[in-house]
Structures are given as C-alpha cells and as structure tokens.
Length: 256
Image (cartoon, rainbow, N blue to C red):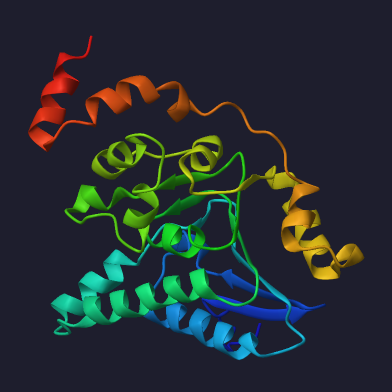
C-alpha cells in the first residue's frame, strides 16, 4: 500500500458542462457549513462566468443527502477569534453578504437546490436566487436567535415579506420550515422530489428545446402537501402582531 497521502477534494466543486456552470458545496461532514474560503471560491466562479458566453445558467447544490448548507462555520469563526483574529467574523460577514447580493443580482439564471438542511447562511445562498427548489427532505430556518443574533444573510428581507405575521414567528422562534412551508412563506418557488433531482440537473445541462430554467423545473415540479404554517396562520397572526416580545410571550402563555 502506498504511503502517499490521498489528495483532498476542495470544499467547493466548480464545474462546467453543456452551458451549465455547477457549484457544489463539498463539506458533507460539516453539513456544507460555509467558511471564508468557500465564499471566496463561489464569488470567483460567478465573476468568471458572468461574461463567459459558454455558461448560460448556474446550478448551486450541496454534496450529500443531509443538506445544502447548515449556515456559517461557527466553530471555525470562534477558533479564529480566540486564536487572535478579532476581525475574522467581520471579514466573513462582509464577504457572505456581498455574495448573497451577487446571487440576487446576477445577470444569468441561478437555480438553487435547497435539498435537506438549509439554514442561516444557507438561506442567504438559496433564498435570493431567481429559481429556488425544495424537496421532501428540506428543512429551512433562520435559527440565529438561538445564539443571540438577529436573522442575517438577507434573512430579515425574506422574513419581512412573508405572509401575515409568519416572518415575526419564524424570526423570534427560529422554527424550521419544510418544503411546503418554505414555498408558502416565500423562501422557495418549486417542489421537486429528491429522487428527480438528478434528472432535473441533466435537463438543465442539456437545455432541452432551449427552454428557460423555470420552464424546465416546472416539468419536475409537484404539488407539495399543505403547509402547516398556512394552517396555523390565525393564531400566529394574532399572537405575533403584539407590539413587544413581552406581550407576545403573554399571548403565548394565554393560549389554551
């Protein structure tokens, strides 16, 4: 057996084929959590493809079945700070926010497969793309309040546009949405069963009949189960319309 160390794969796989640029987050053991290097790689690829006539659209997905992206690499950021790099968090957030804005404003279609866990910084990547796909495995959330943050990575922009008081509910509780909830709340556009994602990628690459990405996605789009959030709108709207967190807590305690 050779003693030569096997090369490690990069944390972001960057590939091109058939007019498709594909970006795959590749840290499955860490649920594809983002570090600064990954953000810079994603941004560099988008820069390179913006004026490349051979790249017509971009697909962003993640390695493994557990999730697209669990958010920022909080452990790595903590280690940077305690290791004597107090601006590590600032550099990360500046780069992350710039990338999220880049995705929102990119001149070519970006299709994001938010399969599995997509939270925090994962919402930043997925939530602002023009074509956002969820599956039966999707779990989306902005859980930053659990560690003392406000919902970031553009999450507050999305939450502020959710129907009724759903945004306040999700922001304050950090509750998870399944695929149905994500579509209802405005965090996703299409529901595609995970078993069909491979076929969808192939269709996007071959661009059958030169259809638009949305038209191709609609070939695989299915109607999800009814949203649990939609079914709870009455009590959520009543409770989270209060003027303060203290009053919201009082209304929650008063619920039967």
